[in-house]
Amino acid sequence: MRSMILFNFLLEATLIGSALVLVIMAVRALLGGRISSRVIYALWLVVAIRLLLPISLPNPLMNHLRPTLSVDGDARPVADQIRTRFLDTVDALAGGESAGAQALTHLGDETRSGRAGKWLLVGYGAVGALVGVALVYRSCRRKSRILRNRTGQPEEALHARYLELCSQYKCKPVPVYLVQYLTAPCIVGRLKPFIAIPEDSAPAHIPYMLAHELCHLKAGDQWWSAVRNVCCMLHWLNPLVWLAAFLSREDAERACDSRVTQQLPGMERLAYANALAGAAGRCCTGASRLMLSGKWLKQRINGVLRTAKVRKWGVALASLLCAVVVLGAFATRESHTPVSIRSIPKASWSAALEPLADTDAAAACARRFLESPFVAVDTAELTLSCREDEQGWRITGEAAGQALYTLVLSPEGEVLLYDGTPALGQLTSLGWLATRSAPSPSLDGYAAAFAAACLPGRAVAAATPMNDLTADGGVHLVLTTLTGTDGAVLGDGLALMVKPQVRVVMYEKDAMNSGE
Image (cartoon, rainbow, N blue to C red):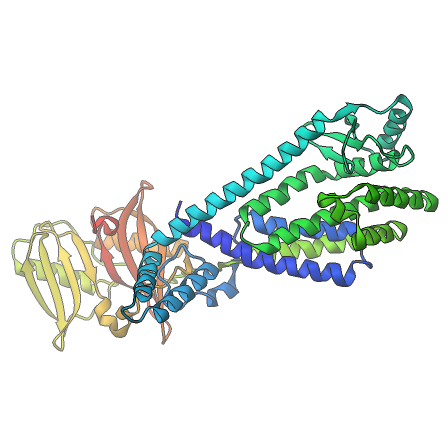
């Protein structure tokens, strides 16, 4: 797996995920008292999806974000822009003979080669693994401490009340234990969870604690806690992710309060609020203290006493908006436009493998190739010069003293190389841009017809776009690789001009292996 694939995901998730965190924080601040706490809690799911899923959807706007002279087709526009701007900054600061300038020059070279990115990912992954180990260790240590301090299960009367609550909130019963030195009730474990209740809790408050934890279980909050930890582990460098994890935990408590009190009358809500205040008096350290102290406790109690009915149309509207936001958050890939070729030439002849005995035979074979409707070169004013080398025959087509076309033919008459890009003038110095084209049946048909007419022995079925070149004047070139009729990649490089006219401008047999 190339390092750029991971950079694409991490950079896009960091930038867009951070923006979503800021938006949800603004929604909490401006609309926290006007919309359901459960809706706000559900919004954090959008952030988690963006932070964790390596999905990229096509977006036409991304076509314009690609740097002008991009050379890495694996880098999507966001990562390519960051990489390009970083290299521009390094190059601007690297002037001079000082040690610092030389170090920056070396950094730029290592970045271009991809080695710096690989080492950066190794370091990032190592720290992320350490963060994950620390989070798992903290969770296991807490669970071990709770298991060690269990003193037993509730009395029969309280257990009967617990079963009534399970029926009321439609939740499957799980074991309940009284635990010494526990500051607040909680759910312990995920696959086989149980509810832990502080041993010294007021008897009148325990039913409300149980109802609260049952609602956590029904919502699957123990699993959402694991999702928060994975987000923090994967994006440990982003402080907004850690802040989002804390805020989402607080919103989980408020959403759970809403579920509990939805079925409680006014006086019961007041009793539940008293239970929260009693729990706040017990918590003296840790995250529980933050969730049950100061303004946080005041906001939770206000939410309990003012719980509004959740309207179905509001939930439906919020779900629709979330779906739109999710789709937009993943729209980070260019929208590739299929190359459309309206008409495929029909050659009046097909090349055959015939031994080329002398320069005249080689020149005649080259001229037929150049004059074919797929190459469409006017050879009337073209001077062809031939020489024999280790590959076979090398033919150069010159006009007005300039070498515009080059062909390499094997001794058997097979085309090994054709290069007509010098005839395109300034285009040859621009380099290949990142892919913006997509496969299409017409492109496959054109490549197959070209091979049938001009490349004997090369049975082509498909042409896969690899890179593009565009320039002023509407010129559009597409570099493809060819696939044989047996499904195997031939490795041949075929460059087509698709605008303003369609013709072959370059062909190289086994282009993928030519550098070996």
